[in-house]
Length: 132
Image: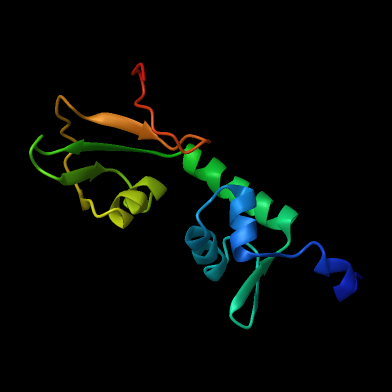
């Protein structure tokens, strides 16, 4: 059993842990709140054991990388993003957080400018089959 003073050096506060992982601190806090990333809420601060938090975030990234969403704009002049597939995909939440009007499209009709966006390990968006 480890004593608290043995753990003190290894615990990182929220913002330092997020910077180490390369993720937004709000996202890390939200993941800790729902139990997806192990963390300790001490008063109004979140503390993390780096190895455990990193393993949990890698698991989340790997799960997201195995899912993809298809989306298209209903009209080039329209700001509506129509999602074909899961509305709980991380990219859908990313679009919502940035003010996009995201709606689920039940029909599987795709139009000329539809693309498939995978959740890449580095977070970059690259259409499948595209040269970008």
